[in-house]
Image (cartoon, rainbow, N blue to C red; front, top):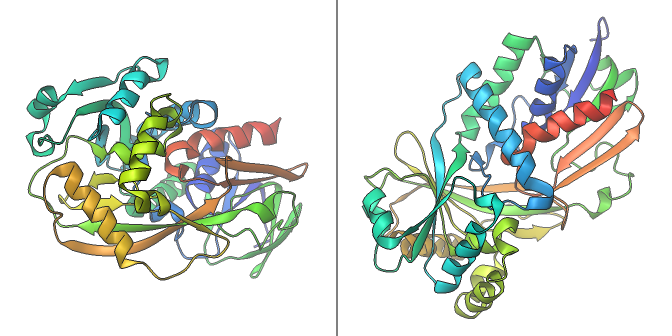
Amino acid sequence: MSTQKYDLAIVGAGILGLSAALAAAKRGLKVVVLDRSSRAMGASVRNFGFVTVTGQDREHTWLRARRSREIWLEVAGAAGIPIAQTGAWITTQRPEATRVLEQFMASDMSEGCELLTQPEAKTRCPWLTHDHVGAVLWSPHELRVESVDAIPQLARWLSAHYGVVFLWNTAVKSIDLPVVSTAQGPVLAERAIVCPGEDTISLYSDRPGMGAISRCQLQMLRLDSPGYRLPGTVMSDLSLLRYGGFAMQPAAHALRSRVSTELPQFLDQGIHLIIAQSADGSLVVGDSHRYDQAVSPFAQESVDQMILEEFGRVTGRPAPAVRERWMGSYAYLANTPVFMDSPADNVRLAIVTSGIGASTGFAIGEELISDLLS
């Protein structure tokens, strides 16, 4: 493993590590990616694969999401990664939520979006416009990929197209450049980027801020096909309280107050609704948010039932049969969507500490490479 020297070694083959590899390879760097598993197994493949632009926090996330969307479109075509869905359909059930969307539409972040009345929305998707739907925000900007397939395909394409070397089942023990010490022997590199995901212990655990990073655990489901196609990825009133671009609107205070009275247990469990449809018609549905330093491996059936209850309110129909259930998990740091550090001159440490890896990873990868090379 020490017979050749790389320009850049990347630790971690999740979306952030692969994004940095792409940005480096585009600049002509010789790149090696090391991962302790045989394939990506963390947050990058346990989520919706939802590239969310509309409603993202302006200060930290919105511009990164716009740039990442551009790169996703570029990469998906070149790497043969199918775009499973485009666009987002955000329905309201409460007048307070409709007011949030009206205020959002008055901002420049709403470019390209439409606020549809219930009759207007019914012409586009009669299956989601029952009597309790107030208004619908349609955004054309969102993309969705099947992350469990897209992440491995992206790695294969980086290897075939750019010559990026992947060393799987290779745990990194320490970094003292030019030596990256692994359980299988040394790897030589001039620079390194560490993208450890949830693993904040193995490398640089003593860096300031690392000890404050906790975990967010999600409950996710896959449902059978409902027998119709959705107009895009669907979200609900509760989503407006979780995305900064919506939650910053003045009307969001009244919405939160009403939801806290009507559905306090939903807020306690961090539940909002995303419904994404796969090519076979099945629905990926979630999710909840539970925060702790160590996450439990045990799912709560009551939480799944609350998610399915919200599904019924939004669609006006009972949820189809549950086909799969799984737990998602990602690193979390309050009010910090991305944790970045420079443990050494030629080393960068980066962790997405919120659920926006698919939405912002490619832009963050470009930032990391620009900073490292400068």
